Length: 211
Ligand SMILES: N[C@@H](CCC(=O)N[C@@H](CS)C(=O)NCC(=O)O)C(=O)O
Image: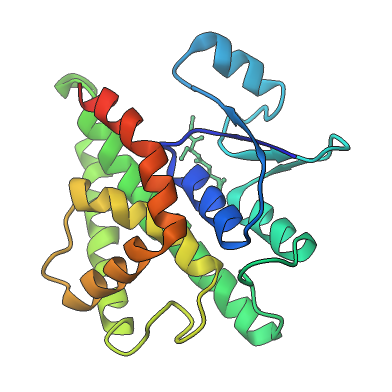
């Protein structure tokens, strides 16, 4: 199976972390959405142009990070479970995965990409809304991790994989140092070998971007 992704993309990192957690391998196909030729070729794989996409050996195509991880957890029996069998725990996993994607990852991306734009093209309204959403989430997460080890309590899951890459970026984009429980949770995530591998893969690209 082939994974179309980019080492700097948070949604790609989420899926690659999932592969590492499952001890599963894939054929990597790095897509650079900034490069017109790479982007044009990728649109034939995913017309929405969103990374990542997993293409199975029979050609079946799976876009969307959470859907890819669901497929992986269903079809690969090695490594850690990403979504528990228990239906209520599975629903809670999906809920926390949605929170991570919609209200942590997406506003983080708004702040990150806005900061790269020339002053005239920036969007202060969107930036203000992103800060407000993240402040709300930081408060909720800090409260939750006063007692929880992982998003589901003691069970590591897709919900933790979903948030880890974004917390990595937030250290640069909107540090959350005053939220001590969130800092501890992030520390546990950053120590996982699956996170360390995606961070190591991203490091040269991040260094090149910073110039
Ligand atoms: N809901 C999608 C979001 C994917 C997404 O937004 N990926 C970003 C990279 S982290 C992307 O492809 N951005 C390019 C664009 O929006 O044009 C998922 O979970 O996979």
